[in-house]
Amino acid sequence: MRVAREEAMGGGKRNTVETFFLATLILWFASLCFQILLNKRWELLSVIAGSIFYQTSNCLIRFFSPHKDKDALFVNTSVSLLHSLLTSSSVIFILFRELLSNGPSGMSDHSQLVEDAWSWAFEALSFSCGYFAYDQWDMLHYRLYNGWIPSILVHHLVLLICFTLALYRNVTINYLILTLICELHSIFLHLRKVRRMAGIRDAKSILVKLEWFLNWVTFFVARSVPHVLITAKLIKDAYKFEKGMELPLALLGMAGMNLLNIGLGIDLLKAFKRERKSQQGNLHHHRE
Image 1 (cartoon, rainbow, N blue to C red):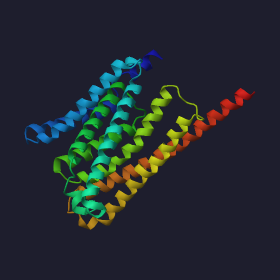
Image 2 (cartoon, rainbow, N blue to C red; image 1 turned 30 degrees about the vertical axis):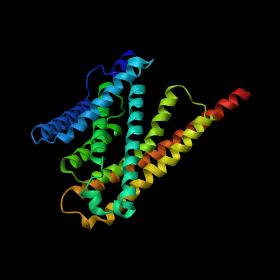
Image 3 (cartoon, rainbow, N blue to C red; image 1 turned 180 degrees about the vertical axis):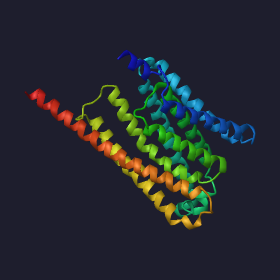
Image 4 (cartoon, helix red, strand yellow; image 1 turned 180 degrees about the horizontal axis):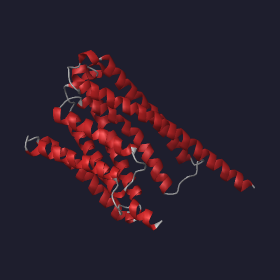
């Protein structure tokens, strides 16, 4: 148990999986520095600012948390919750501002979605990209993943590749902002995890019922439906894309997101049934 605990907290020998994802993160950081310093892309400093901001948040939460460094998962989830709150708020602000300015038809124009960037969209995407780099490092450092091919590390790697390529080339920025509306649902995913780690598991509680209600509503409204619509829009406008990697990467990325959404929905349903079953078992035990 002690050895397992040390490995979970970052001790022990690094395995092949960890080495691979750490190497890709280092290569990503090297390419970012190359763009900033040699190509003078100073606007990309907001990516590094995002990483520093969330790493600082991690340190502050760890310092003030009663768990200290004994529960890296609690700290990581708390920072993820902060990211979801900030990102979803910024995305809603950007979309609402553009909706008032250009209307639905103007916002859905192909050239707007692919070639332009709405006000603050570049900065919001860069800051969120910095978060995924921080989170990848934190999960590798404390080994907050499972399996030989951890889906969370693969997910972060794919996002880093898609986000940074879009930022480097200044294309599909608005499309990626639209995909980030799913962070509204992630708020309730992280809240559920924090709530359970805090020991609040009463399925009959009004707060827990409200959390589950909002979890399901935002899963469909802010994650599943938007990603399906974005995929449909890409397919519909496929002929408008110039020859290159933009369309294949976009379609591949959305296919991956839709598959992840299906898996997430199945996991959520299992968790929901498990919590209700556990509560019913506790009630039956008390009656006896």
